[in-house]
Image 1 (cartoon, helix red, strand yellow):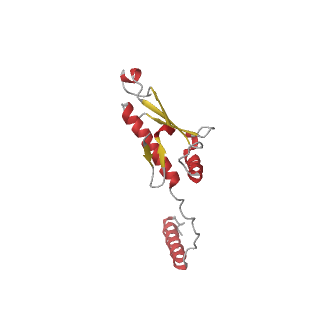
Image 2 (cartoon, one colour; image 1 turned 90 degrees about the vertical axis):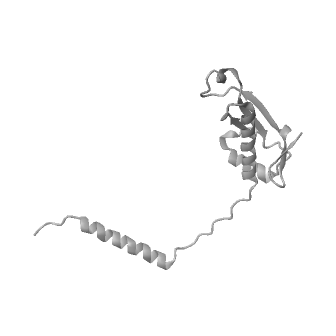
Image 3 (cartoon, helix red, strand yellow; image 1 turned 30 degrees about the vertical axis):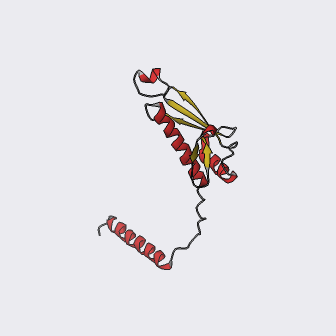
Length: 142
């Protein structure tokens, strides 16, 4: 079976993806009632031999509600009017999700303190704003 290349280290076998074609919902005239153009892709994240354990763990977090209890990722693709284009779209979305899970996590944020000058600028602008608002208040006439 052909391989789907994710990045230079990861490639998944096409046989790991189970696809079924169903009728699409939404507009499409009579065509929508006759032709099964929508694609439902299923990819077993937990059982995949192609993915490293760290990528599997991140992918489960990223998948959210698209992941079943058994660890199968379900992607529904029905944007286009043809089966072929919907299949390509579903595979593209799967590849994008795996790439996102395979990307290294961002470095942790290091907390910083505002500089003394920025604190002074902030307080000065608050003071100016307060004076403008004070001028708007009506004063009792003597």
